[in-house]
Image (cartoon, rainbow, N blue to C red; front, top):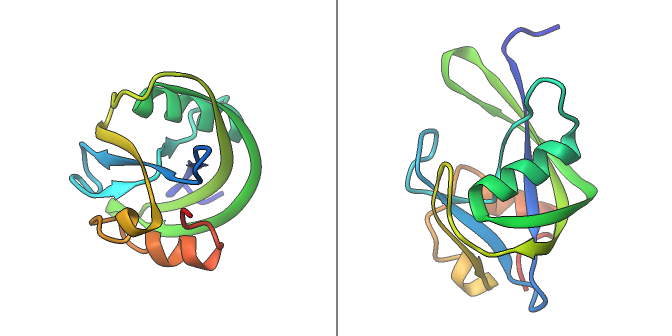
Length: 134
């Protein structure tokens, strides 16, 4: 087992206008940049539980977690390798309020998304997965 592997999840949440839920990161890595809600999988959690918890903590929304969309690897600090699995998720409750390590949270159109300063490779990855909003 690789001691430096860090399992993470992200959520691709769209509203009924197919706008994408994004959060502005309040902490490193990527402080001030926009990304999709997500974070580390905690010990004892499976991916769907981690996705639901992270979305709730960062956006105030309750989600139903769907299919795996894709997986990426990103280099982290001190030799860590972040293995990030992104899932479709549907908002089923809650109210959109940034929290935890998000300084802002909102749904954006494709045009709005493309003007935001986003985390490394987010836009190109979502393009590859055909997962951009709109």
